[in-house]
Each structure stands twice: as structure tokens, then as C-alpha cells.
Length: 140
Image (tube, rainbow, N blue to C red; front, top):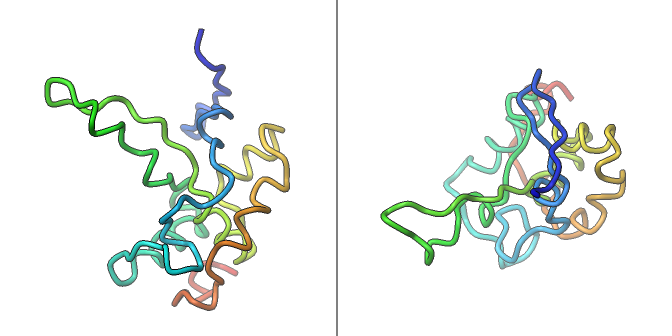
């Protein structure tokens, strides 16, 4: 029997604690890391991601290492199913701006995760000042 899902169909969200919130720290090359291990994204991409989370245009952003199945396991040209997990790097940066991404708010309110869920990620991620985001544009 699979892990139980907590449906929130009215907003199109299914929360599976063991998958959705599997990661508590940014991955080894998360683009939101505050060290030299962070992968480079095209100019403005990090700002686009954080802006969409702060405005609620997107309810979540998944860790790039969890979006696609293991490419070594391609069968008949199809990648295996993925197990998307919230990107704790993006979630931590959104929190540093003063607003949790929607999926973090939902998980916390439902008791699926604790309010300290992102504590390990906060010290490992970039500061809001390093992004070119106008706080008025994101209603902060």
C-alpha cells in the first residue's frame, strides 16, 4: 500500500509528507545555495522562480533532482515516474523575503511539517539582497 495522500483538490494539491517534504536542505548544487556549488541559471531565472512563489502564481517549486526519474532506468524511451519534492533552497529564500511558498504554508497548517522545517536550509541559501526583485512587485 502506498503512502497516504492528503488531498486539497480545490487548489490542486496532494501532499505526501514522505515525498513532497522529503528534502530539508538544499541539494548539492541547488541554484539557491550561497556557496560555489550552486549551479548557474540563465540571467533572471532565480528571480522568476522566487517572484512566482512570492506572488502565489506558483504554489511550489520542486528540487531539480526530484523532477525526473533516474535517466539510467529509461525503458522503451520513457523515463520512470518522478517523486517531486519541494526545493528547500527556493522555499528558504522565499521565507527570507517574509513569505512562505503556498505548499509550505499548507504543510505547516495541516501539521504535515513543523514550523522549523526550513531551519537547516536558511543558513545555506542566498539572501534576498542578492536577487533583483522589487518588493513592491511581489506585494511585500
